[in-house]
Length: 67
Image 1 (cartoon, rainbow, N blue to C red):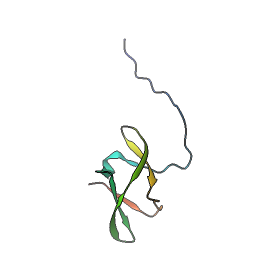
Image 2 (image 1 turned 90 degrees about the horizontal axis):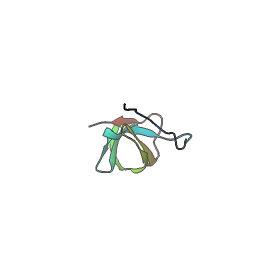
Image 3 (image 1 turned 30 degrees about the vertical axis):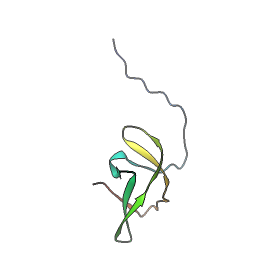
Image 4 (image 1 turned 120 degrees about the vertical axis):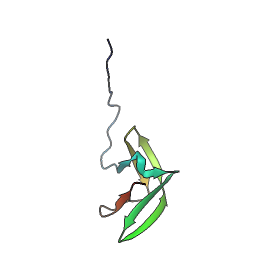
């Protein structure tokens, strides 16, 4: 028999998550006010699908560009 088990270690409120695919060489590309901006990203917790972005501060109106 086999089993797939997930343990919840901790919870963070108000964490900013982006798909891992959006990170390229430690950078993230966002579209803000019609302009594409490449920013260096400071990453927190990461799983197979999402990464927590600690810096830069992202606005709710920002669009994440996935290459």
